[in-house]
Each structure stands twice: as structure tokens, then as C-alpha cells.
Length: 429
Image (cartoon, rainbow, N blue to C red):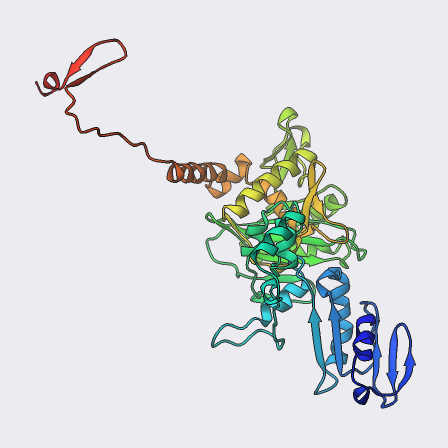
């Protein structure tokens, strides 16, 4: 509002209208025009009628607030034929602003996925800024800060589990099917394919989310074919959301995270809904938690896995390798968005403040699952061996070939390490 007032004061007198109100949060002119400044919230402009709405630094609005705001403001936007929405922001991660920007960008001969028109202002468009200015700015800040603030690049948070360059390349797409409960299907079930569902549970009180991902493990690269995310569903009803999806995806193997109330979800799924393809886990001393077929001694096998420090550490390491080496294909915007804010904190990784990591944690547990011998038995694939072979292949390709020196002379032989002299004539015999 301060900049708008300053701009108004610099207008020529003949363009200025009489001012009726000149308050901190609003301006009213004598011709009836009104400008209102409000914080971004779900009730900010509810009930009003506006000709132009401008959202400043919208990328820095928390994701949940941005979604609630758009839900409340969209009826206002569509109420008039001439209503305009202007969104101005510096990029910050892959959030709602990123989604609007990507869908607005139009390739030659194609239509954008929304009605916004993208306008980009690059640092080189500002007079007086050249390569020398760029070098000086980077030396005063950092490469990542410069790329975000001036190169207008949608980088993720600092110290993310997945490298920012890889996050930039992870393109999401529109699901083939989705519903209001939070299910998003990207690839429908295929006959003969094997699927794994990893389930994360919450208390269903509007805070953390129930979440599960469906992964096609028929062949490498694995692919996330469906996701589910909901924070309103009661835990007792959550198994009823898992069961039909698991049955449709060829009776998928289901791994449930049982740290909190997940045990209740696993019990209902197995005992009440009589779903048998539950992945059992057993504690085996120093080995820690090991997946088995549910035949633990003395009934010690659990219907799921507890996310311990060791499980999370292994899962994060494997997930990083899977995604960065393109051994796991992820096309869900929710997963990509969470990966952009899944950052290092101490000796572990977790979501940044005011963000969630429920979908990511299902993939962390999937990463841990791929290291288990039982997983190799049911899928017939060894992801560790595959990653190792790819790494060795890359090292061989990058290795500098050995050379030799030709001084033009005609060698007559050589002396080996034992002192024996070998002549070429002796070899030719």
C-alpha cells in the first residue's frame, strides 16, 4: 500500500482524483474507486466485489494458506467479466505459485493449461546490470540465492534430501483420475504387474495427513502410479480407503507404518477386512527390523514397520539414490512439493516448519523395503545391485583411457621385474 500511495502522489495533478479516505490499509477516491490492502487469508476478500486483485510475493505464502485463499477468492474473481488477477512474486520452491506459472507458460502452437499470461523479468533486463555485477552479487551472497532472486529459478529449499537440480527436472502431470477424498491415479492397474502400497497414518484431526503411495515394482525403474492424501478421515475408516485400492492393484503388498495408531489400521485391514497381503516385519537382534512372511517365532512378527532412526536413515539414503538415478519415477505434484521442503535437520531429514512430509515418508519406507531380501524374492529385482552396476558403468565411462608414448624408435625387447631380458625375435620364434 505504501508504494501505491507513493505512485499516486507522483501522478500529475490533472490525473489525481480527490481523496475521501487515506488510511493505512485503504484508499477511497471521490469517483468511488477504492483500494484495499489485506493480509493473505481465507477471509481476506470474502464477500467483496473487486475489479483487480493483486497478490504480492505469493510464492512466500504457506501452501495451506494459499490454497484456502484461492478457494475463497475465486468466486470473487469470476463474478465480473473484466476482473483481473495479477500475481507478482520471486520464485520459492515448487508450490502453488510454481504450479500456476508452469501451467501458464505456453509453447509455440499450444494453449496454456490456465488463463494466466506469464511475464518474466530477468536481472539482465535491468539497466546497469552486467556479468561483472552478477559475479559481485554472487560473491556477496551465494549461487543458490542469486539463482532464486535474480535468475527466477524455482529451486527447492536449502539442504534438501534430493539435489535441487534433480528437483527442477521432476515434472508432474495431471492424474488420469482423482476424487475429493484425496486419491490421485496416474496409471491404472495392469494385468500381471506387481504393486506395493506404503501406508502412513495420522490422527485425522486436520493436522498431519493420512497418506499412501502405490508403486509399480514390476520392473526397474519403479513408478508411483497412485497417491492418497487426506487429513480429515478418521483412523478407523482409513482401512476402508486402502482396501479397494489394494484389491484393484492386483492385491498389492501393503506395508503399514505402525509408530502411532498405524497398528490399529493394520489390524482392521487384516482382521476385519480380511486382507492377507500385509507385509510383516520382525525384530532380529542387531539386524533390526527385517521383513518376513509373517512366520515369526512366538508371534513376534508385526503387521507393519516402526519408523526407527535406522529405518529412516536407510530409507532416506536409498530414496535419494532411487530418485537421482531415475530408478523411481514420480509424477505426483504433492510428492514433488513435499520433496522440495524435505530438508536436513540434525542427523535426519524432515519437513520444514509449516510443511508436511507424509507422502515423502511413504517413499522413505519404500526405499527401506527395497533393501530387504523378502522384497527381492517377491519382485525378482535387486535394486542395490542395479544401482552398483550403474555406478561402475558411469565410472568406467568417465575414466581417462590409458595412453602410450611413441618416440619413433624400433624397440628390440624389454626387461621384466625379475631381470629377464625378452627380445622380440624370441617371441616371434
